Image 1: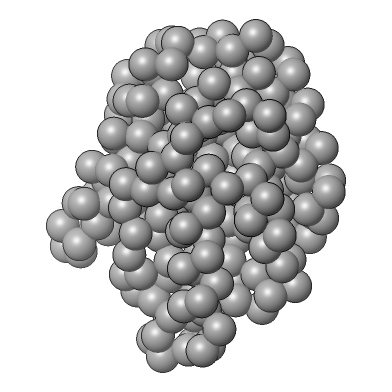
Image 2: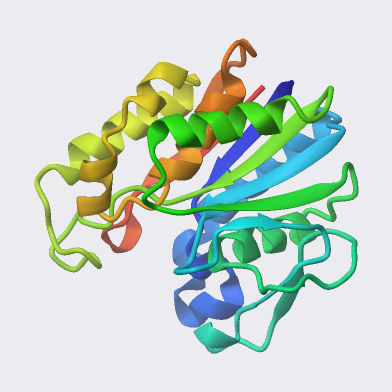
Length: 235
């Protein structure tokens, strides 16, 4: 059963080493992420799943011990997803950010496994995956990584789209209130057009939270660089 969840954005820029001179711009987001991960530990889960958007061809399960690297972002830094033997595949970027957040928090509270979700995964399939995760142990926690739209300004990665602000506002409201139905109702096609990589991971969370009766709190909401970033805690 799902007992807690933390929702964070997943840009490699969360790592100060990647952001370099721009690092202070995301200090508030990093602080909120640390608070959300800390609440996961307080829930004393039996198992933690780290869920994020998949890189091209890198979807599926990543066992404890899988490694990720930020070399592609100009930083000589490797991370490991919990304790275990090296995995056969490198972590996708989102799960590597999750591994960094957990390392930063000195996570040692429960076994870890990663799940990278393809952007084309339907809401029904996402929810089914979430239900499976929630049923895998008596006390399950999720660290869910994903960004909102990437179309909030003309300088955003996807340029300005007038629909982006409304999409992000609804996503933030749903994440901040643990509104499972609203998360499952997010339109996959619109999310893809707006480059909202968090849609599928959020819908995995929604499936896992069905019937759990969790409350949500929005800890951070902003759109630096024209991308929607949200941090939320469910417990």
